[in-house]
Length: 484
Image (cartoon, rainbow, N blue to C red; front, top):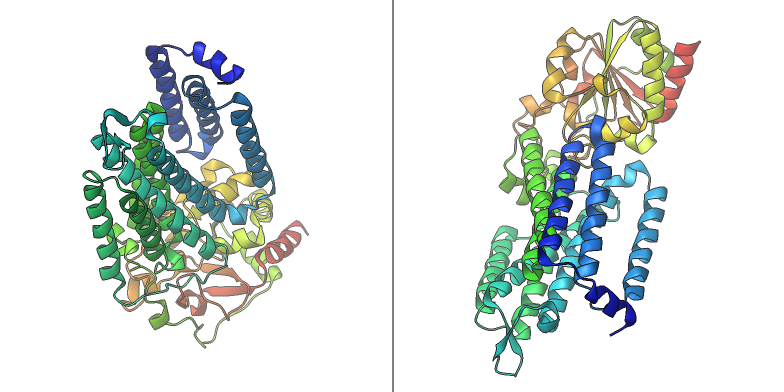
């Protein structure tokens, strides 16, 4: 034992103090989630989360230090440096990929903890000192094997599923569904095998059982996500967030660490609730999304734009129409994120407000590539929070609005969701921008389609003017016209 180990072990606080410290950390995490529920209090929520994590880590180090303090500090420093560099360099458009990557790390962490605990149960205090297995190893407590098996399986599914989500979001893999023959039967069979092996693990902790569970879980995570279309990515991200939380909670039970249990349960339950909200926003059941139902008909619906007449306009035309409007509702989408146009949009809105125009922002729950993507971009541009409205709060206003200014929000404004039963987005609640007197729609070209793979009939309506250009360049040109 090193000097550092001995010093910390001798100074270990009593269990009541440890429990109280973890309780404070858990309270901080709850306050963090409460703060993150609103853009106004999100910074405060982040601070509470940071404080809670510092308390949890410090308490764990003091009570569970089994290696030298130098090694622990070095590992924390490496992770901190990597996290800081990534946070500084990551573009806002790549935030969904970053979130998916973080989920994969949480899943792999759960897997590695399970492997370490399985290979050396004595070090984790989960072995029965009085009972040996047939090869002379101490048996792991039965209850612990249940927790370990579940944490291992959920962690492995989270890791491989998050890797596929990252590859799809990052463009390394097609966003279209990749459907395997009889995929539902295969997935259900593998999941049943995993659950059966976890049950068998209670009677036989042989390595082949443990590592077969691991391998099958990695495989089913891959198979579950690969058939899901790109339009489902917001739900996939929140779903994987929930999985990562439950994996952490299960490993918390394995390690008898109440901080991990509390944190994992909070993340798991909040992620599950968010997934439900996302599914409700798309008028889909959670099961249909997991089964790859939404966006799954892309190949049938077609990925080509419709060859129909449409009206185009210039920045000068758009500036004239908006300057003479009473109310403009801005509808941001992934096109704004790709072009990094949020600051230009806010500048345009400020100029319109100087002209006496009422300006509001309409956010669809699944706009972008992760939950809250558009809200984060608008907050980055210092858009006032009281000007940003969710779908259910603003949808009735489009009928009394002079101009709906849409920036690359294709699928969430497509009227086919209400009229075309053959469309893969049929039934999804949309922003009723077509009811505005004039719709200004920024799009790079008419040759592409949205992430769900269907064309938008809104482009060909009589009250729609297409502004075909890069979003930032077009908005900057409109700003110049408004300022002239």
